[in-house]
Image 1 (spheres, rainbow, N blue to C red):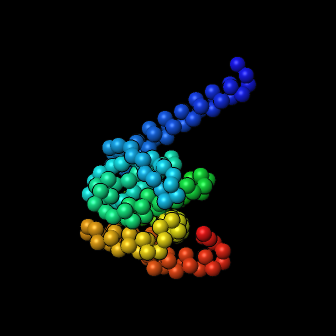
Image 2: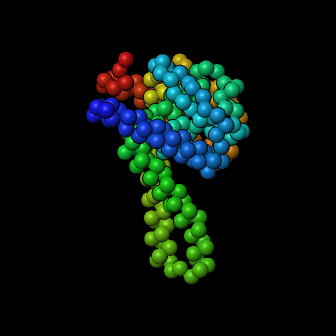
Image 3: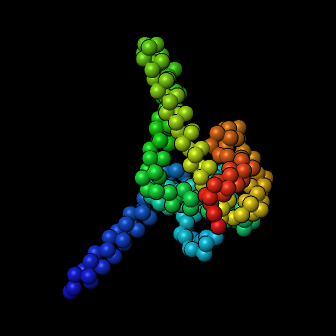
Length: 222
């Protein structure tokens, strides 16, 4: 057996092992996220490429979610009743997250986890008072929590803005607007959901304005 053949066999086995781990890790993530995978389906992107998506089905307002393992989850329950523009928007948005540089993606997930820790610190601060923790220690704890939460909000806002810009670039302005108009009419969002939407996601018109400015300086060209 030649060196090249041996190398190819090793690469193929490593690829199969990576695919197996990616699949199992994605299913575990979805299960822990309370969105168990029902099936895998293939979607065709705007560029004509095919992408595998893990499908779940529930009545939440979550259309899709990327995972730390370079895969995407899509809500079959919501996507089954929307137009092609909206479905394409969701897929392209999640693909933008998925295709981010692996180092950046890892840092993003780390910051999101830190933000969750910061929120937990804030929520359990009252319990610490009852346990006799000093005011000085609590002040430092709340300051640390605030830094984690604010950093998480800023970084997440930047990440979601980038994903929206990529989706707009793929769809075009008309389909992008149509997709957002349809999304805004689907279901009822809770107060918490509305607040998170304002904090984490840019307004469609803001995205379009920013996109046009980027085009003027040579970014997002044809």
